[in-house]
Image (tube, rainbow, N blue to C red; front, side, top):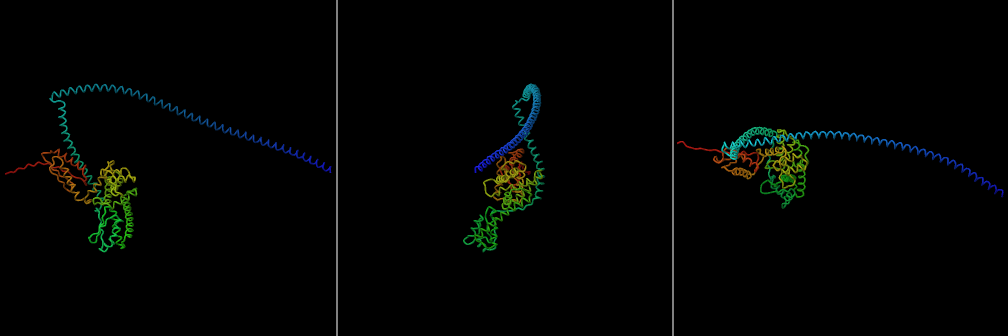
Length: 507
């Protein structure tokens, strides 16, 4: 047993010894491998460091080259600037020298002028003294007489010159105006429509009238409330009167009544339904009319709201003249005149069509229609010359372009042609009386007569109170005052009559 133990101990010692020897071998091998890896890592890091150094060196050299290039360019620019400055300096020096020379010459010339001025004043005094001695008049007296003579001569020459120019202008203007107007009338043939504030709706029988009225007037009240139109039912047979200043509302009421009578079902609910339906139809008709008008006239690019305003003109009249027809007529007149005068006919036609849009606003502002139309055109991005033409066609604002007087003239032509407008009798008579009273306010006027529907004013003056020159001046003054203070269609001819009658009898 001891023997076995000894053997076991010896075996265990030999095992430990072998294990120690093997571990040492393995350690040596691992140490060699680690040393090799360390060497490789070291070489790799050295290579990377060399590459990094080379890259940094190259980058630095590139930066240095760039800096050198920039410095060279800056040096070149500085040299060029120095050359330019030197050139400018030399040029300034040259100009200063020339200025000095010119200043010296001017001073010499001023000195000569002063000497000549003194000599001239001396000669004038001598001549004045000689003239006073010869004429026996002082300088002031002679000056007054000369001024009076020159005034009379200038007045006579001016009047004759004015008459010659006016006669020549009349001959040329009448010829050209007749040509333009004839051409325009040939191109523009419009119908005159007369409208007022009432519309008469015809019915077949009094039975239908009773159905329209309804029980205790309910249908009438419902229709008036829905349309905003006063409906007058009186003893007039087969007729109902629709009264309203808004022609659109009158048209809606008329069409609604027509549909209700045709349908036969007349009660408040049906009335409200029909009125709403007709209102939409009329609004669509307004827009369609505006589009059709702009297409017919060849006007493009109008704002949809302006197109609606143009269509709304169909239901508006001014002095009995349909506003849409008037605007179309003015547009064509403007285009024709602009073409004759060498201006843009498209702009003229556009301004002519839009010149009265201030008469058909959705609200009722306290503004003249010309200013309101100009603001609406500005709001919807129309060009400044179009806006100015709209605003100035009644002299509300100052005219800035040639387009403005064309629109003003064409508006007057359209309103002044026979049959275009109708006036209230009282307003017509007042205008004639105003014409006569205006001329009577001048001294020397004996009688005045407004004839030819206010298109001509005859003024009779006293032969002993005015001479021929004063007569001509009087006609100019009256014409100017009428232009400034009165509103009238077309033009007014002023004829001043001065005569002397000598009567005797042979017996």
